[in-house]
Image 1: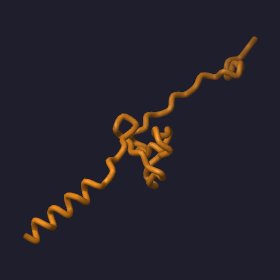
Image 2: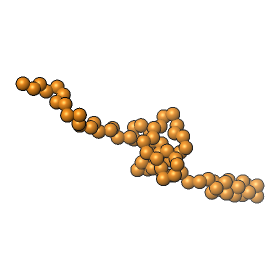
Image 3: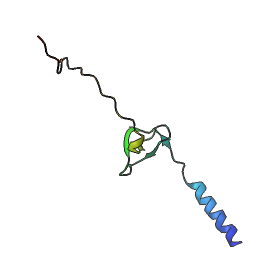
Image 4: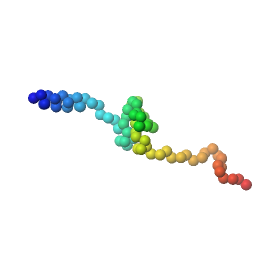
Length: 76
C-alpha cells in the first residue's frame, strides 16, 4: 500500500512539471538564461532565449564587400 501511495505521489508531481518549449528545429530549449556551454541567437515566442549548443548552430555566411572598394585588385 505504501508503494502504491509513493508511485501515485511521484506521478502527480511529474504531471505538474511544465513541458519544455523547444526551438531552433527542436535542437534548442527556451530558457531565461542559457547554460555556460550554450549560445542564443533568437528569442522564443515568450521572453525566453532559445539556448542552443554551438555545434548545432550553422556557420554564419560571409557578406559580400559592399563598401564600393575594389579590395586587392589593382587599377591601371
